[in-house]
Length: 310
Image (cartoon, rainbow, N blue to C red):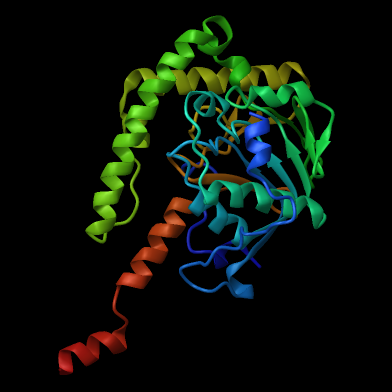
Protein backbone atom coordinates (compact mmCIF):
# COMPACT_ATOMS: atom_id res chain seq x y z
CA UNK A 1 0.00 0.00 0.00
CA UNK A 2 1.03 3.60 -0.32
CA UNK A 3 2.06 5.73 2.62
CA UNK A 4 -0.95 7.93 2.03
CA UNK A 5 -3.20 5.11 3.26
CA UNK A 6 -2.13 5.69 6.86
CA UNK A 7 -3.72 8.61 8.70
CA UNK A 8 -0.60 10.75 9.21
CA UNK A 9 2.86 10.25 7.72
CA UNK A 10 5.47 12.95 8.18
CA UNK A 11 7.44 13.70 5.05
CA UNK A 12 11.11 14.84 5.14
CA UNK A 13 11.37 18.29 6.63
CA UNK A 14 7.85 18.36 8.01
CA UNK A 15 8.87 17.38 11.52
CA UNK A 16 9.89 16.02 12.29
CA UNK A 17 20.14 -5.92 32.86
CA UNK A 18 20.33 -9.08 32.34
CA UNK A 19 19.24 -11.85 34.42
CA UNK A 20 16.24 -10.04 35.86
CA UNK A 21 15.14 -9.22 32.37
CA UNK A 22 15.56 -12.77 31.10
CA UNK A 23 13.57 -14.12 34.05
CA UNK A 24 10.63 -12.02 32.93
CA UNK A 25 10.60 -13.33 29.38
CA UNK A 26 8.84 -16.49 28.27
CA UNK A 27 10.42 -17.34 24.94
CA UNK A 28 7.40 -19.34 23.85
CA UNK A 29 4.82 -16.71 24.68
CA UNK A 30 3.43 -14.17 22.32
CA UNK A 31 1.16 -11.73 24.08
CA UNK A 32 2.15 -8.78 21.92
CA UNK A 33 -0.94 -8.89 19.75
CA UNK A 34 -2.84 -6.46 21.89
CA UNK A 35 -6.32 -5.29 21.02
CA UNK A 36 -6.39 -2.09 19.00
CA UNK A 37 -8.91 0.67 19.16
CA UNK A 38 -10.09 -0.59 15.77
CA UNK A 39 -9.50 -4.10 14.34
CA UNK A 40 -6.68 -4.10 11.75
CA UNK A 41 -7.55 -4.78 8.15
CA UNK A 42 -5.27 -5.10 5.08
CA UNK A 43 -5.76 -1.44 4.22
CA UNK A 44 -4.49 -0.38 7.65
CA UNK A 45 -1.01 -1.81 7.14
CA UNK A 46 2.10 -0.27 5.65
CA UNK A 47 4.73 -2.53 4.07
CA UNK A 48 8.24 -1.07 3.95
CA UNK A 49 11.77 -2.32 3.40
CA UNK A 50 13.28 -1.13 6.70
CA UNK A 51 12.14 0.32 10.02
CA UNK A 52 14.38 2.21 12.45
CA UNK A 53 13.28 2.81 16.05
CA UNK A 54 15.25 3.91 19.11
CA UNK A 55 14.93 5.29 22.61
CA UNK A 56 12.05 3.05 23.64
CA UNK A 57 13.31 2.98 27.26
CA UNK A 58 11.64 -0.26 28.30
CA UNK A 59 11.81 -0.49 32.09
CA UNK A 60 10.66 3.07 32.69
CA UNK A 61 7.16 4.42 33.40
CA UNK A 62 7.61 6.91 30.57
CA UNK A 63 7.90 4.25 27.88
CA UNK A 64 4.88 4.30 25.54
CA UNK A 65 4.91 0.54 24.97
CA UNK A 66 1.22 0.61 24.07
CA UNK A 67 1.81 3.00 21.20
CA UNK A 68 4.86 1.06 19.98
CA UNK A 69 2.89 -2.20 19.94
CA UNK A 70 0.20 -0.45 17.93
CA UNK A 71 2.83 0.77 15.47
CA UNK A 72 4.43 -2.67 15.14
CA UNK A 73 1.02 -4.20 14.42
CA UNK A 74 0.46 -1.82 11.53
CA UNK A 75 3.90 -1.62 9.88
CA UNK A 76 5.51 -4.66 8.24
CA UNK A 77 9.19 -4.67 7.23
CA UNK A 78 12.03 -6.83 5.92
CA UNK A 79 14.59 -5.28 8.28
CA UNK A 80 14.09 -3.81 11.75
CA UNK A 81 16.85 -1.73 13.32
CA UNK A 82 16.75 -1.11 17.09
CA UNK A 83 18.97 1.96 17.32
CA UNK A 84 19.80 2.03 21.03
CA UNK A 85 18.22 2.72 24.41
CA UNK A 86 15.71 -0.05 23.85
CA UNK A 87 15.96 -1.18 27.49
CA UNK A 88 16.78 1.42 30.13
CA UNK A 89 19.43 -0.28 32.27
CA UNK A 90 20.08 2.91 34.24
CA UNK A 91 16.51 3.00 35.50
CA UNK A 92 16.26 -0.75 36.13
CA UNK A 93 19.36 -0.61 38.34
CA UNK A 94 17.66 1.99 40.51
CA UNK A 95 14.18 0.48 40.58
CA UNK A 96 12.69 -2.54 38.85
CA UNK A 97 9.78 -1.65 36.62
CA UNK A 98 8.61 -4.14 34.01
CA UNK A 99 4.87 -4.26 33.27
CA UNK A 100 3.30 -6.74 30.88
CA UNK A 101 3.27 -4.29 27.98
CA UNK A 102 7.09 -4.06 28.12
CA UNK A 103 7.29 -7.85 28.03
CA UNK A 104 4.95 -7.77 25.06
CA UNK A 105 7.29 -5.46 23.14
CA UNK A 106 10.23 -7.84 23.65
CA UNK A 107 8.12 -10.80 22.57
CA UNK A 108 6.95 -8.90 19.51
CA UNK A 109 10.57 -8.23 18.49
CA UNK A 110 11.59 -11.86 19.07
CA UNK A 111 8.60 -13.06 17.06
CA UNK A 112 9.53 -10.77 14.18
CA UNK A 113 13.03 -12.31 14.11
CA UNK A 114 11.58 -15.85 14.22
CA UNK A 115 9.30 -15.08 11.29
CA UNK A 116 12.12 -13.91 9.03
CA UNK A 117 12.55 -10.20 9.67
CA UNK A 118 16.20 -9.28 10.06
CA UNK A 119 16.41 -7.58 13.47
CA UNK A 120 19.58 -5.61 14.29
CA UNK A 121 20.13 -4.22 17.79
CA UNK A 122 22.66 -1.40 18.25
CA UNK A 123 22.99 -0.68 22.00
CA UNK A 124 22.92 2.87 23.31
CA UNK A 125 24.12 4.43 26.54
CA UNK A 126 21.09 3.35 28.57
CA UNK A 127 21.43 -0.29 27.46
CA UNK A 128 25.23 -0.26 27.32
CA UNK A 129 25.27 -3.61 29.21
CA UNK A 130 24.43 -5.21 25.85
CA UNK A 131 27.72 -3.99 24.36
CA UNK A 132 29.36 -6.98 26.06
CA UNK A 133 27.60 -9.16 23.49
CA UNK A 134 28.61 -7.44 20.24
CA UNK A 135 28.74 -9.85 17.32
CA UNK A 136 26.38 -12.33 18.96
CA UNK A 137 22.73 -13.20 18.38
CA UNK A 138 19.92 -13.62 20.88
CA UNK A 139 16.71 -15.20 19.65
CA UNK A 140 17.75 -14.29 16.12
CA UNK A 141 18.41 -10.65 17.00
CA UNK A 142 21.89 -9.49 15.93
CA UNK A 143 23.88 -7.23 18.25
CA UNK A 144 26.20 -4.69 16.59
CA UNK A 145 28.14 -1.67 17.80
CA UNK A 146 27.09 0.16 14.67
CA UNK A 147 26.06 -0.80 11.16
CA UNK A 148 26.39 0.36 7.55
CA UNK A 149 23.02 0.01 5.88
CA UNK A 150 22.72 0.07 2.09
CA UNK A 151 19.37 1.41 1.01
CA UNK A 152 17.40 0.10 -1.95
CA UNK A 153 18.64 3.01 -4.08
CA UNK A 154 22.31 2.26 -3.30
CA UNK A 155 23.03 4.86 -0.63
CA UNK A 156 25.12 3.83 2.37
CA UNK A 157 23.99 4.95 5.83
CA UNK A 158 25.93 4.79 9.09
CA UNK A 159 23.48 3.48 11.72
CA UNK A 160 24.49 4.17 15.33
CA UNK A 161 22.82 5.35 18.51
CA UNK A 162 24.52 8.73 18.85
CA UNK A 163 25.85 8.81 22.40
CA UNK A 164 29.42 8.89 21.03
CA UNK A 165 28.72 12.51 20.18
CA UNK A 166 27.34 13.45 23.58
CA UNK A 167 30.15 15.19 25.48
CA UNK A 168 28.38 14.78 28.80
CA UNK A 169 28.07 11.02 28.44
CA UNK A 170 31.62 10.59 27.17
CA UNK A 171 33.48 13.02 29.46
CA UNK A 172 31.40 13.16 32.64
CA UNK A 173 29.01 10.18 32.85
CA UNK A 174 27.84 11.12 36.35
CA UNK A 175 26.45 14.38 34.95
CA UNK A 176 24.41 12.38 32.49
CA UNK A 177 22.82 10.46 35.38
CA UNK A 178 21.99 13.74 37.15
CA UNK A 179 20.35 15.01 33.99
CA UNK A 180 18.56 11.71 33.60
CA UNK A 181 16.86 12.16 36.99
CA UNK A 182 15.70 15.66 36.07
CA UNK A 183 14.34 14.25 32.82
CA UNK A 184 12.46 11.52 34.74
CA UNK A 185 10.77 14.22 36.82
CA UNK A 186 9.59 15.94 33.64
CA UNK A 187 8.26 12.65 32.32
CA UNK A 188 6.38 11.95 35.57
CA UNK A 189 4.78 15.36 35.29
CA UNK A 190 4.01 14.58 31.67
CA UNK A 191 2.24 11.31 32.64
CA UNK A 192 0.07 13.03 35.26
CA UNK A 193 -0.83 15.75 32.78
CA UNK A 194 -1.84 13.25 30.12
CA UNK A 195 -3.80 11.17 32.62
CA UNK A 196 -5.86 14.29 33.30
CA UNK A 197 -6.16 15.01 29.57
CA UNK A 198 -7.42 11.46 28.98
CA UNK A 199 -10.12 11.88 31.63
CA UNK A 200 -11.16 15.06 29.86
CA UNK A 201 -11.33 13.25 26.54
CA UNK A 202 -8.26 15.01 25.13
CA UNK A 203 -5.51 13.29 23.09
CA UNK A 204 -1.87 12.73 24.13
CA UNK A 205 0.44 15.77 24.24
CA UNK A 206 4.16 15.77 25.19
CA UNK A 207 5.16 18.39 27.74
CA UNK A 208 8.81 17.29 27.68
CA UNK A 209 8.97 17.60 23.90
CA UNK A 210 7.38 21.03 24.05
CA UNK A 211 9.91 22.24 26.64
CA UNK A 212 12.82 20.85 24.65
CA UNK A 213 11.82 22.75 21.54
CA UNK A 214 11.26 25.98 23.48
CA UNK A 215 14.51 26.08 25.46
CA UNK A 216 17.22 27.77 23.39
CA UNK A 217 20.02 25.76 24.99
CA UNK A 218 18.35 22.49 24.05
CA UNK A 219 17.76 23.71 20.50
CA UNK A 220 21.43 24.67 20.16
CA UNK A 221 22.52 21.25 21.46
CA UNK A 222 20.35 19.50 18.90
CA UNK A 223 21.84 21.59 16.10
CA UNK A 224 25.42 20.93 17.23
CA UNK A 225 24.72 17.20 17.57
CA UNK A 226 23.27 16.96 14.08
CA UNK A 227 26.21 18.82 12.53
CA UNK A 228 28.80 16.67 14.33
CA UNK A 229 27.10 13.42 13.31
CA UNK A 230 26.81 14.48 9.68
CA UNK A 231 30.47 15.58 9.63
CA UNK A 232 31.62 12.14 10.85
CA UNK A 233 29.48 10.36 8.25
CA UNK A 234 31.13 12.47 5.54
CA UNK A 235 34.61 11.61 6.90
CA UNK A 236 33.70 7.92 6.63
CA UNK A 237 32.74 8.35 2.99
CA UNK A 238 29.09 7.56 3.57
CA UNK A 239 25.96 9.09 2.11
CA UNK A 240 24.10 9.57 5.35
CA UNK A 241 23.60 8.72 8.98
CA UNK A 242 20.68 7.24 10.93
CA UNK A 243 20.69 7.70 14.70
CA UNK A 244 18.61 8.37 17.81
CA UNK A 245 19.69 9.43 21.30
CA UNK A 246 18.41 13.02 21.42
CA UNK A 247 14.68 12.22 21.22
CA UNK A 248 14.19 14.57 18.29
CA UNK A 249 13.06 13.11 14.98
CA UNK A 250 14.51 14.79 11.91
CA UNK A 251 15.21 14.08 8.26
CA UNK A 252 17.18 16.62 6.28
CA UNK A 253 20.31 17.33 4.27
CA UNK A 254 23.39 18.72 6.05
CA UNK A 255 26.12 19.74 3.61
CA UNK A 256 25.23 16.94 1.21
CA UNK A 257 24.82 14.29 3.91
CA UNK A 258 21.40 12.82 4.69
CA UNK A 259 20.83 13.17 8.42
CA UNK A 260 18.03 11.01 9.83
CA UNK A 261 17.01 10.71 13.46
CA UNK A 262 14.20 8.29 14.24
CA UNK A 263 13.09 10.08 17.44
CA UNK A 264 11.81 8.11 20.42
CA UNK A 265 8.90 6.25 22.05
CA UNK A 266 8.74 8.33 25.22
CA UNK A 267 8.00 11.81 23.97
CA UNK A 268 7.41 12.04 20.25
CA UNK A 269 6.42 8.45 19.27
CA UNK A 270 8.23 8.49 15.94
CA UNK A 271 10.02 6.02 13.66
CA UNK A 272 12.01 6.19 10.44
CA UNK A 273 11.06 3.92 7.56
CA UNK A 274 12.72 3.08 4.26
CA UNK A 275 10.32 2.44 1.41
CA UNK A 276 10.97 -0.24 -1.26
CA UNK A 277 12.50 2.40 -3.55
CA UNK A 278 14.96 3.59 -0.87
CA UNK A 279 13.08 6.72 0.06
CA UNK A 280 13.21 7.61 3.76
CA UNK A 281 10.29 8.96 5.72
CA UNK A 282 9.47 9.77 9.33
CA UNK A 283 6.23 8.38 10.71
CA UNK A 284 4.74 10.38 13.55
CA UNK A 285 2.60 7.83 15.40
CA UNK A 286 1.41 10.40 17.92
CA UNK A 287 -0.31 12.13 15.01
CA UNK A 288 -1.80 8.80 13.94
CA UNK A 289 -3.21 8.33 17.44
CA UNK A 290 -4.55 11.88 17.51
CA UNK A 291 -6.23 11.37 14.15
CA UNK A 292 -7.75 8.12 15.38
CA UNK A 293 -8.96 9.83 18.55
CA UNK A 294 -10.54 12.59 16.49
CA UNK A 295 -12.23 10.07 14.21
CA UNK A 296 -13.57 8.02 17.11
CA UNK A 297 -14.89 11.03 19.05
CA UNK A 298 -16.38 12.99 16.15
CA UNK A 299 -19.99 12.07 15.35
CA UNK A 300 -20.64 10.91 11.82
CA UNK A 301 -23.04 12.87 9.62
CA UNK A 302 -25.69 10.21 10.15
CA UNK A 303 -25.26 10.37 13.93
CA UNK A 304 -25.35 14.15 13.86
CA UNK A 305 -28.51 14.11 11.76
CA UNK A 306 -30.18 11.66 14.13
CA UNK A 307 -29.26 13.84 17.09
CA UNK A 308 -30.70 16.92 15.41
CA UNK A 309 -33.87 15.08 14.43
CA UNK A 310 -34.32 13.90 17.99
